[in-house]
Length: 225
Image 1 (spheres, rainbow, N blue to C red):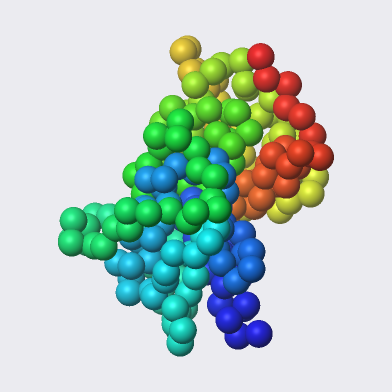
Image 2 (cartoon, rainbow, N blue to C red):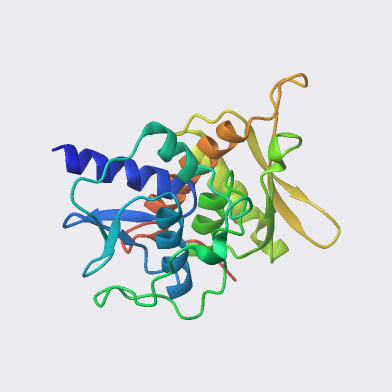
């Protein structure tokens, strides 16, 4: 029971950092959207934090007697390579034999800002491809720029539906520029402060909505041109 609870907590923290994993047969299994290099990033992150894992059949397994403190969960969720001697961190050269990865995905998850990494994943997962992103670093609004302007209405529809089922800390909207569009957020009161943790909460909640409703085989189908 304790191991299952730990796996679920690790799953949640990794998802917040942009690694969408599920618990399958006591392994943390990364979604097939990710690439081999993304898997290596995830294992390297955990290794850097001295969390004992090994390669399993489909994902990663926790080594016996592994414990993860609340502080470590927080470090996973807001991990950035800056400040770490990253080149000295162990990187596995293998991936699980039964895991189907995506060779066409060249997006680095650890290069994404932690506040919006999960949402960047979810958008790309369902074909709403992104070009740049920034979580605002607690100083300004988050922005996720989309490659195609004609996806604006699709994302507006998703936001309208999600707002009926999910409670968000900020008001998320599409901002249209001259040559691009961005998914961004607004504060409800002008004197509210930007909080990256709340942005991450919102991003995860919206990601879960998109993943559940649009990525599954029996989910809704997006109208993409």
